[in-house]
Amino acid sequence: MDSLRKTVERFSAVSTQEIISISHQELAWSENVKAKNPMISYLTYGFELIAV
Image (cartoon, rainbow, N blue to C red; front, top):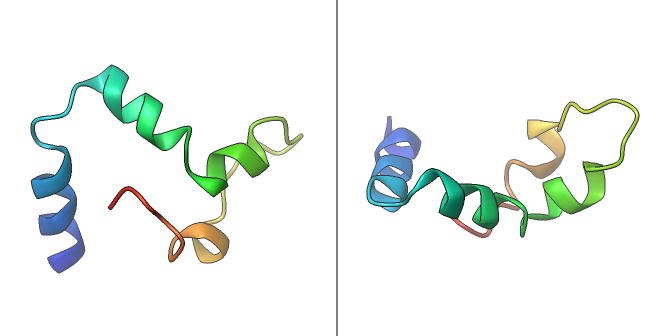
Protein backbone atom coordinates (compact mmCIF):
# COMPACT_ATOMS: atom_id res chain seq x y z
CA MET A 1 0.00 0.00 0.00
CA ASP A 2 2.85 2.37 0.78
CA SER A 3 4.32 1.91 -2.70
CA LEU A 4 0.97 2.62 -4.32
CA ARG A 5 0.46 5.70 -2.16
CA LYS A 6 3.89 7.08 -3.06
CA THR A 7 3.25 6.45 -6.75
CA VAL A 8 -0.08 8.27 -6.65
CA GLU A 9 1.49 11.19 -4.78
CA ARG A 10 4.33 11.42 -7.29
CA PHE A 11 2.31 11.12 -10.50
CA SER A 12 -1.22 12.36 -9.74
CA ALA A 13 -0.56 15.77 -11.32
CA VAL A 14 1.69 14.51 -14.12
CA SER A 15 0.44 14.22 -17.70
CA THR A 16 0.68 11.07 -19.76
CA GLN A 17 3.37 12.59 -21.97
CA GLU A 18 5.40 13.59 -18.92
CA ILE A 19 5.14 10.06 -17.51
CA ILE A 20 6.34 8.66 -20.82
CA SER A 21 9.28 11.05 -20.83
CA ILE A 22 10.14 10.20 -17.22
CA SER A 23 9.90 6.46 -17.82
CA HIS A 24 12.25 6.69 -20.82
CA GLN A 25 14.95 8.06 -18.50
CA GLU A 26 14.86 4.87 -16.41
CA LEU A 27 17.55 2.23 -16.81
CA ALA A 28 14.85 -0.39 -17.35
CA TRP A 29 13.68 1.43 -20.48
CA SER A 30 17.09 2.24 -21.92
CA GLU A 31 18.37 -1.31 -21.51
CA ASN A 32 15.25 -2.97 -22.92
CA VAL A 33 13.89 -0.65 -25.60
CA LYS A 34 15.38 -2.71 -28.44
CA ALA A 35 15.13 -6.13 -26.78
CA LYS A 36 13.61 -9.02 -28.65
CA ASN A 37 11.52 -9.75 -25.56
CA PRO A 38 9.81 -6.44 -24.68
CA MET A 39 9.03 -7.50 -21.10
CA ILE A 40 10.91 -5.52 -18.44
CA SER A 41 11.82 -7.51 -15.33
CA TYR A 42 10.53 -5.94 -12.12
CA LEU A 43 12.95 -8.16 -10.22
CA THR A 44 15.90 -6.72 -12.11
CA TYR A 45 14.87 -3.06 -12.28
CA GLY A 46 12.15 -2.53 -9.69
CA PHE A 47 14.52 -1.37 -6.97
CA GLU A 48 16.50 0.92 -9.28
CA LEU A 49 13.70 3.33 -10.18
CA ILE A 50 14.85 6.94 -10.02
CA ALA A 51 11.54 8.71 -10.67
CA VAL A 52 9.66 7.38 -7.66
